[in-house]
Length: 379
Length: 102
Image (cartoon, rainbow over all chains, first blue to last red; front, side, top):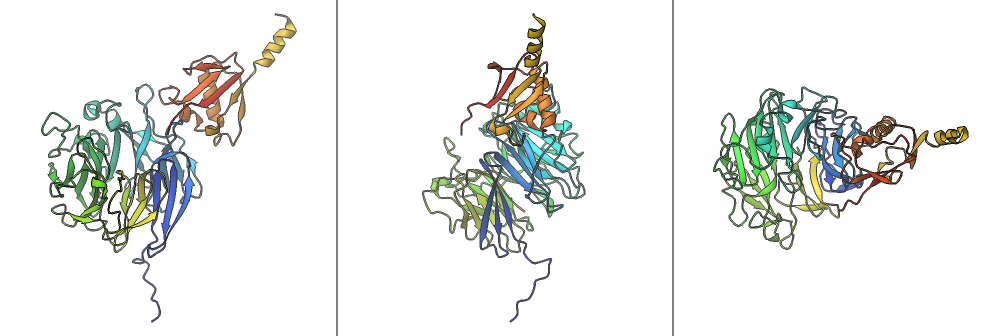
C-alpha cells in the first residue's frame, strides 16, 4: 500500500530539545518518529547556561540566559533558530542605587500570544524583568521588584537555595495577558491580575516545614509551578515539601504528594504536564530525607506519573538504570513535546538526556557525556 | 620641567593601553589590546570601552558600579578596587579573570 501523506495539521513535527548545561548549550534533534537523535553544539562553550527557550509565537526566536565564572549575567538572542546570536543590549539588572545585583537570569517565559516580542525573566536573587522587544532590552517589573513587601516575602538576597534564591515559573494565563503567576525559592507562589503592578501570595495549604508557623502566608519553597494551557485555572507545583494542585478561584492548595509511595516520597525538583490532558502529569522524585542528598531515592531513578490529577501515581522506570544511578533532575530539566503520543524528556545532573516516546512507559538514553544539565526545553 | 621633557611626558600619557583578557575578546573581535584616549577615571575608561564594544562593561561591572567578584583590574600594576580610581596619569589598564573555580 502506498504511504499516505499525513495532513499537515496532524503530522508530528520533528522534536528539538534545547539543552542548557553548566558549560554551554547543546541542541538535540530527532527525526519525525523520534527514534534517532542528533546532537549539535556547543553554543556558548564555557558559559553557565541556565535556560534556553524558543518562542512559540514566531517559531524562530531563541533566548538563552548565561553567565560565566568570571563574567556577569547576560541574555543571548537568536532570530534564526540558533544560526546566529546577538547579546541583549540591556540585560536584566536591578535599578542603580537599589543595592541589589542580578547574579544570573534563571528563568525565561515568552509572553502572551497577543503580545509578540514580550518576554519575562526571573532572576537570582528574586527579581522579575520584562522585555517588549524580543529580549533585546529588559526593564524591571517595578510592581514586584519594588513592592514594599518583597523583602518580607523573599528574605534577604543571601537567603535561599544553595545556588542562590530564585524567581522562576513565570506563568502567563492564556486567557489574559495581565494575569500572571510566579514561583520563588524561597518566597512561595504569587499572583498578579494587573500585569505585575501588584502581587498577592497564593500559598495556603502548602507546607513549609522549615518555618515555625504551621500554615504561613508566604516564605515557601515551590521548586516548579505549572499551569495547564487547556485549563488555566488548574495549577500544579512540585514543592520542597510535597506536590500540590489548585483549581482557581480556590485559594488553598491540595496535597497530592501524600499519595506517592512512602519509600520514594513527594520531594523533587521538576514537574511536567501533559499538553492536552489536565489530569496527567509527571514528576521526578529525589531523596529529600535526613541531610537532603538530592539524588534518586536509593540510586534507582524513576519517573512517576499521575493520570487523575494526583490522586494516584504510577512508577515509570522501564529502561532506566535499575541500581547505582545517583543522579537527579533539576527543576527546568524535564519537558514534554506536543506529539499525539506525548514524548517526555529529562536531563540529569550527570549529563545524560533520557527520552520516552510513549508518555513515560519506557525510557531510552538519547544523549550522554554532556555537562551537568540545568534545563531542557522542547521547540 | 623642561619644555621638551614636558612634551614627552604629555606624549606618554595621551593614551591608556587596555589589555583585554581572553574571556572578553569575543567583544573586541579578538583584539588583545585596545588603546583609549586619556580618561579621568576607570569608570570613564570602561564606559568608553563599552561604547566601542557594547555589552562589555556589564560583564565586568555590576549595576551598582562594583567590579564583579572574579574580575580584577590593575592600573599600572596596582589593583583597582573601585571604578572611581583615577587613571588620568596612567599608561596601562590590565583586566583579568581572577581565580574562579569549577
